[in-house]
Image 1 (tube, rainbow, N blue to C red):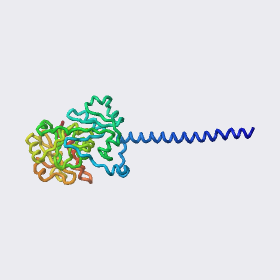
Image 2: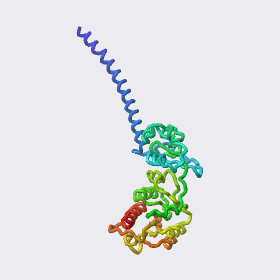
Image 3: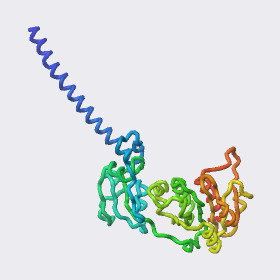
Length: 306
């Protein structure tokens, strides 16, 4: 009787042990899949970065940017693409998105967009934009925005002019501030300035669709045209002769900011109505150009009382 009881215990114990191992293996696989899905979803939302090239292997090392036609632009990122889709001035070509990104864009019926919509994986977008683009699972092929002329800005009380600011991240940040302070346009040079691109639009986080981005061939000529339109132009210079607050004049202001390293060019200094500085009481006397632009626009709006 004792032997039978012992045998009875040993048989079920072995069977239970084997089944438990299978259960744990299945659970581990299930949880690993859930973790991967959660990580991929966070990457699509831009909450974690796309892995850097040294972690992506040979495919990332071999990636080359596709050749684009002059009228071809790729925008990416949820805020950027949503703003572009909402902009009636945009001529869009095709939307590529993951199923999750499409839901986050709140597009229930893709047919209403009037353009082809392609469901893709994040890796499909990486092949076009590169492994470092934080695209959040969405990419929009579109055309450049229509060209705007300075004459169309004559009724705007506040403009921002950039003298060869080259970094698209800085220009994008400046555009966001310009929209926040209701400036009429961001004006820059065609050379030594970023063109309309995915990087610029992503940095602007939708602001590219909300404010004219005007590129001109000759900055001195453009400043002269602004004078004829009634604008008082002020060049920001860390060694300007007077504080910005005491330099404002007239009812329409155009603020002119120089490049990240060299500042305003000599020809620009000679063309603007006045040079002014931002007085800072702290030990650091110079700011990033995007920060300086935001402060200057705030001061200008206080003066204009608009």
